[in-house]
Image 1 (cartoon, rainbow, N blue to C red):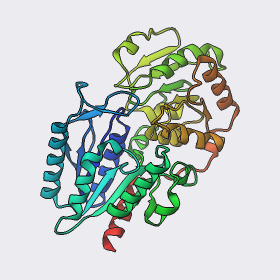
Image 2: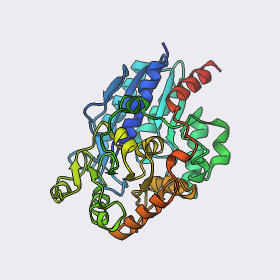
Image 3: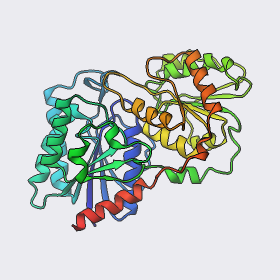
Length: 380
């Protein structure tokens, strides 16, 4: 059985790890023996479907800027900690002797992890039987300066065999966010979006959330401004008489949870496993524009407002939301403009626009297509 060594690092939210777990399950179902190596904070209840799991000494982003790394207690990541992670990774690589090495996002992202990823990839090239090395990347990457784009191209040329783009070019072409597309496209393959299709299929017959407004913030680490704006916007919209369900996410800071006092017509609760059912029954979805949430919204919701999280180093959500808004599929609140009124205005635009069900279905076969691509690349 072919072995896959799959490296993933989540820094702020848990979306990267969630997608990696879905992909790991698909790879196992497709005949691979998968080791998923995670470098972020431990996450309970991760469904791996037969994939093996290894937890590195964890680190996270020091803050929302994503500029610096920290241990989970907030202390800096020093050279000794870096060395510990490198040694563990190289030991795992030698023990596994994989047929495939997958890096999640790198070298398009996770560049703060160069200290361990470059040694890992160079060591993979030095194995007696070098593995196929591929980057598993989302539909959108952070916009970068020319020198950073050139570095990405050089790393891909030197160390990678393939780029697996988990998106649908009919919706969001990769070149929209990566300016070096012309120089990498010969080794790039679209797989379709990687989606937790099984979760949606099992929850179609419930009426839970009928005609509500569902407000969600994914893991919730940076979701407090959207939650607060939604509470203030409700009375300004044509849906003020509907229940508004606020799904907080497990990483929403405690101080922000405490500030939310339930009022008539507003339901406040943790994120739910039947999120896709709520989306399918709701009159409107209001959410950030993370990868997993957007796929679920496009597949299940009727109408949607996207409020992307953005910072100097985080442009992915804004690019994704803008691409969909330009096609008339969603309404969007531009980064830096969130308020009760701007959100209420976006709700009005979403209700006046077409249903998402009027658009062609996006490609969500990313798991099986990734499996087929890897089998084909290994064969050649």
